[in-house]
Structure formats: structure tokens, C-alpha cells
Amino acid sequence: MEEIRSVADALCIALEDDKAEDLILIELQGKSSLADFMIIASGRSGRHVAALASSVAQEVKKITGRSPSVEGMPNADWVLIDAGDVIVHLFRPEVREFYNLEKIWVSDKSAHRTSAT
Image (tube, rainbow, N blue to C red; front, side, top):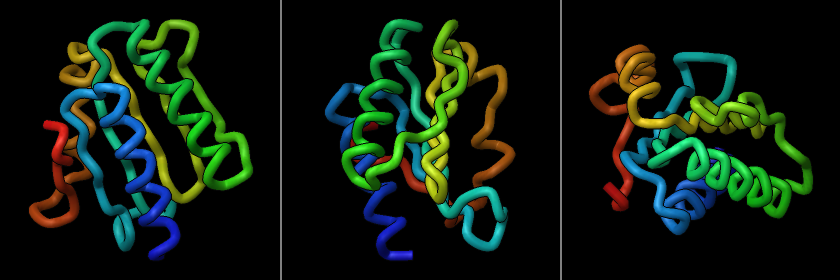
């Protein structure tokens, strides 16, 4: 779990460095078998979301040696990056507000906003 947490933290740092907005890390252990962590963040525009997604994909490859599965790049309204034990959702703000994934997954203690917010 520590190794997975370090991957999630590294991806959060990469997103902070690339100026992702409203970044949140959600611990899924015990809630879902999909992954151990979920990261949700916003980009200012479709172009920014696409750039964030490319950066995260490169970081995943660098850390794990595996290329992640990436969905949603053509429109870049909502890009999903599946890095195995860490799932990253990147949104344009209005799309994020519409889907409101935080409401589905967040309990009082399972998530925290990172220092970039």
C-alpha cells in the first residue's frame, strides 16, 4: 500500500506542478476493488486538461514502467487515466461540476485536498 500511495502522491505533485486546479486525492481501499486511490482535478480548458493528461501518463510510465490506459483525449472534457491501483480523472470545471464524482466517492476522512488548492 505504501508503494501505491507513493505513486498517487507523485501524480498529485506532477499535477500541482502543471497547475491543475481543485486537486483531490481519495482513498478507495475498502470502498472499491477498482483501485486504491482516485485523483480528481480540473484544468482550465480542454487544452489544459489534455496537457495534464499527457503529463500524468508520462509520469506513470516513468514511475511504473507501464503505459497507463487513457480515455477521453479527443475532446478532453473528461480524461480518465487508469494506472492500475491509481485512477486519475481530469475535467474541465463545468464538466466536473456536472458529474460531481466527489459526492459519490468522498466520505469525511477518505479524501483530502492537496496544497495546490
